[in-house]
Length: 237
Image (cartoon, rainbow, N blue to C red):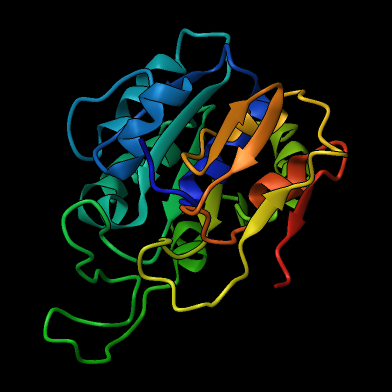
């Protein structure tokens, strides 16, 4: 499974919330391929194919087609697919999961990080500006940790016609230097609805009809954001 606090968990939750579980999710190569366990990856062929397969499927499929690709994979092999989708007026959603690194193979830098392979500062390619430069008119950037806010923004862009690009921007939980307090479930407020389990976070378990948060919690707060009863609270101690 994906790591506790992985921003991809929030991205997948948001996409399912807005586009529905019956949407077609064309996937790619990266940590996010594990989204197959969460019902958000339906295809996986090779680097860059998440976009191109999605373009092909969208030509005859009436369901929402969501192409998922990471930032590193996008810079490696996703750009030609994006240009092809623009050129051929594709009606699909391209979701770029920008976790600011190449997480699956060892956290190497890429053109979007502003650091080269030698660790030197270099020109940072702005993903949003780059996508707009390729001719995409409907582009938004959201923070997957801020789920409620992001759901509203994604719902707005869903109503647009043609090609849409959503950039989910939040650094990988394993490289984040931000210090956060862990969360816990207040048993008096928890109703056992299991809504928090829909995130797929390995820090959350369910026992005795109550959700529980273990030591793997990294304090991202996504579960607290979606709890309908306010039962998930920050550990201030």
